[in-house]
Length: 406
Image (cartoon, rainbow, N blue to C red):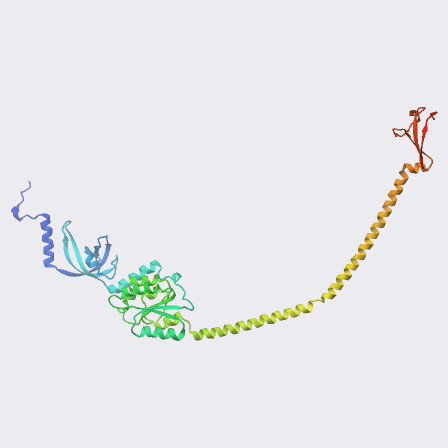
């Protein structure tokens, strides 16, 4: 049999909401803000901009949230597997009654947030192919106009102008002064690159500044500056800092110069080198022309030696024509003699077969008059018929008086 519970007064009984509120107030009063180290997992960023994740160690985990106002200030992107140190307060999400860490600040453990953000940006841009050699453009050999985006004061612009003028005095230089560090530097550099690209005669662009600390060079690690360089209409030479300083702008530029002076030497050739090269090419072309001319002269002389006198050729051709004429005349004479012999033989044959030859031997041909039919049988002739007798010489008309059959 179940014993009745020893119930307290109704006024001492808490609702679930009151209990969760009491836990939250107790935690806030007794714990306050705490620093917690752990590894991020189940990280997600919905459209609201609030960052939800779990913070765990090798045994336990706790749900955490970082609201949009704090998340927007992070220089890096939190991701699964990243070990961080966070500052926040422990509370209760009252609708579900779950324990939750409300994070106000976050720092990667073992590396600064800025450095982590830089590495993350490098990986993302490399995945897009912005650092690939296949998209790098060659620099023009002899540019008409060189653009410079840098700070107007200081040694950088002075060194660039001195080197450009010394190497190629004819080159035109267009300068777009910008702030290269501090507040507004990123926006100024991006706008400067876009504006100088509108110069129609621009062939190549130098973007850079002098050396400095990582913080001084940070504008050239900004994604907006990097994408402005990648979008440039003309090839870009990056000259940021000194040889040991490498920024993301150096990686995306078409060429990277270790110093501003080296950048100037990259974009324009030295007129002395050009003059020397031109002299060398001139000598080479002249020697080649002389060789060709000598070769042509030797071929002409060889052809001249083999060339016969046209008058001799003509005389030879005339002799050949005379020879062919004589052979033709002889051939025609031979053909005519053969033809005459053939005609004579045929004539003799015809003469032998001719009725006239028979008549020469004393015979005659009798024809009925006036029909002209030849009489071959005496039995067909009757008394009184008129016949025409043809002799070897002449003819006579006779009348039959006595047909006699032999």
